Image (cartoon, rainbow, N blue to C red):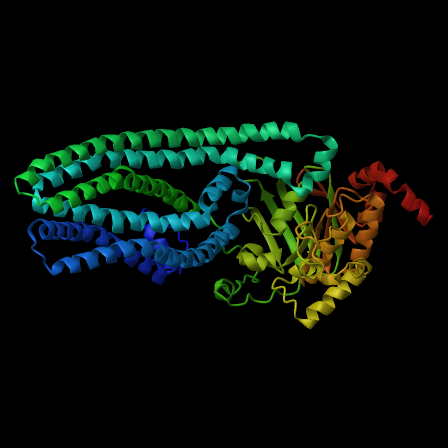
Length: 627
């Protein structure tokens, strides 16, 4: 079983990784390749014996019964080389399937454990793409290139050289010397090709995105309306052409070097064959061995001049890949540190239960209090404090709103609340326990969130909503009852009933029978998903920003009724909906400047009152209706 560990990965891992994923298939591929190599070696002797026996029988009438044996062996070797490839493909396919599942799972786990700031770092994204992209091809080539080089090419060359040396020792030295320059050329070429792919990765990512803009269904309407296809197409071509030229330059240099080396080696091989003619005439070599060795040397030239050197180049390329894999495995992960807690309430969740394979996380206790205590935070690599000596306290069952102008620290507050960033000064306490003592998975389970750019899953209505339960057990009657109750409360039931297949209708644009919802319907689906998650805190980070203020207030009011009894946090820059909250925090310059109910803050005539009066015209219709 493959497990990604923080260690130095080397070219030997080209075999270790496949073996850890599927040991039986890897061994069988190795055996298949080894038999093929032996067949190529002994074919030189068998062909020579068969030719000598045939010539002796024809020229002198000396028929030897061993001639049939050599003929049968020759047929078996030729037949094996024809069928061995398909046998090897069978084992390789099994390994690739197993390897994809295990390696991708480990890569996904690693990404999920990365510190959040790394996910926003372009260099980390490029490194991850180089490691993960074309995973299936990389896994197959890791095994094939390693086994071909060490189990096929090296033994085959060694075996043929030993056969030549047994006849004419100095010829073996000449042939061996011919291969040395090509190996060095291949190593340098492989490194250049991998580094070229590293340089081209930025342009490839851009041209793939622009291609999606030019062809994707999501951009169809605006692409047709604005007619920007020509301009985007020119941008796409520039990015594509730049990446292509980088790859072509590296490949051209490598190919010219290889072809030049192969040409020189072919000339030398021809010279070796000419040298063998007088040796054959003098009786040092038989005619059969001359023909067989000449053929073997030309095969060897092709093997050393192109196939082996290409394999060496690929090994050099994957040696560079292993450096990237080492860097990827070494990326810092979220550390479970023992933070300080208030008074004697210091506690630590059961790590074995949360981190053990297949063991359930401990139950999260009901929220009693959630407190920021003198928290100061700045983003990694910057010297600017976003939150400054920030303090606030939330209680169970209260509806809170957090408001403030752009740059006040609302988004940063959400990232700290949900554990995306854990390197801060001060304390964030859940029922008196420092939240950094919680395992990451348990911290995430405290919140059920709906974000402004909430996800739209191209799954069925039922699957979209039940994703909020985590395990998405769609056959569970209790979950289905909860789902229908939530959709009814959010006013979605009539919309779902009007769909052709009801809750089984697939949403989005992938399938012929898929149905795309309106923006408001998608928002209600996202809210239903959040309500399906029985988390202690419901968090809404401006998910209705695309709605008009009146519709936003109406939807928040409906959500507030449904979530009554839960602790909810509304993040908004529009203040019409905040009137529905029990308690409002007003952020400015990374601190809580004001707090209280809507009425209390309006009466105070401070920051909140000024912001509300500025936005009051948005709600004129609503207030007129109330009047």
